[in-house]
Length: 265
Image 1 (cartoon, rainbow, N blue to C red):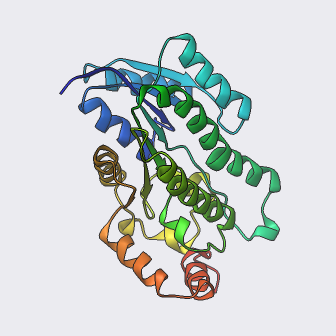
Image 2 (cartoon, rainbow, N blue to C red; image 1 turned 30 degrees about the horizontal axis):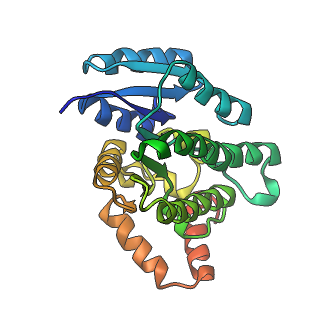
């Protein structure tokens, strides 16, 4: 099926789940706008995706900065592009006890994980509402459902993403625009490295990490079906079912045990 001139805007589209999502859209003949900071990675991925016979626009932006989020959308408008689909994938974490972590890094995380997403979504909706069509996929996490000692700011940002996504989905239900939230569990990407989290117990056993390709396929299918929420992976569905039966303090303690440093007795 051809989707020519139907552009998909994907933040963090050069690695991990974002890259795998971009692959799914390219295979299905959607044109791409991929956003990341690294020019060389963007060029490499663009060359790869063009092999699927689609147009690829690369935009290098630092989405920690609000002005760069606005300028990203301005560039699209100047080029006459109104993406049909928005994938808010870019996100990072910062590891450690809150009293010991760097506040500037945490403010960056809040700006990337929350502020950039609400700006892009607001601009996307202004474009798409008059047209009565569009799809949004927001990357939350199973972390959105439980408190996260050793990773508290990240868990808090993802709780925001889930709650806000479900709220605007309801607001948009008669608009022709769908909002889908994807909740992956721990996944084999560069996330743990960027968060400084490689020494945590949860990152130690790579065999138990999900495949980013499988997560992306789950997200792609849920988005295309217009689903509200997709928890990726049976293990994550079961762990969330258990968390729903626990008190918040019990869930926080269990998560602390999973996320504390592996050498922390």
